[in-house]
Image (tube, rainbow, N blue to C red):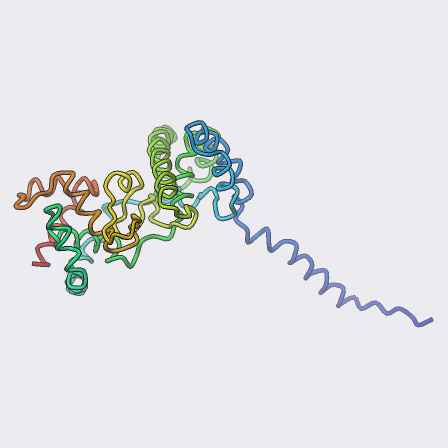
Length: 294
């Protein structure tokens, strides 16, 4: 019988490789992915009670790409509107790109201006600031963002989020609870609007991405604004805010509703634009861009 030779070096390498194979998948996989059904359990029950199809809701929240977005919700504790550099949009290169955009979509902008009475320069300025003329529209799942925020109405979920963010959060515990209560109510309303929108248009809700706040498309509309103001600008039967023509006409529809009209004075123009983004800094930038586009 041949003697059995034990190569201890080989055994050590094999054991090490096996250990890596066992541990790496768990390290790479988001720790919250398997727990999404737990985090969203209360939310799913609430949606079903309010009339959403149970089978569709359960199937949606069982999908692997749908998860509780801890990273996304934490951005609310560090994001500050005043810290955004709006001056970049009034630079020579930005204005040049905006003028090129106006030339490319002159027909569509003129149509929107004719129908709704909204200055095409204002529409262009908003698209420039919101998404750099459609180049940057956000990379966070709108479904995950709104579902995560809406789930903060559950005190148990709120406790988990607080534990994960309390050390870096500028809120006190009392302020966090107050913010969570208000934000979850808002997010739930937006989530319902989002689900109604995607179901109406036959869009896969899990595939739509937007800002950390849940705004989406070239116009960066919140879902409730889509239902209220978004229009089919190109006549294809679909309201798609990732389409420039639809985005242009939808922005005009929005501003017109809030009072924009030909010959509007600066004071009232500020009030209308403020509805789009509740920031005086934002409003001033939009008006400055429009002047530079003259």
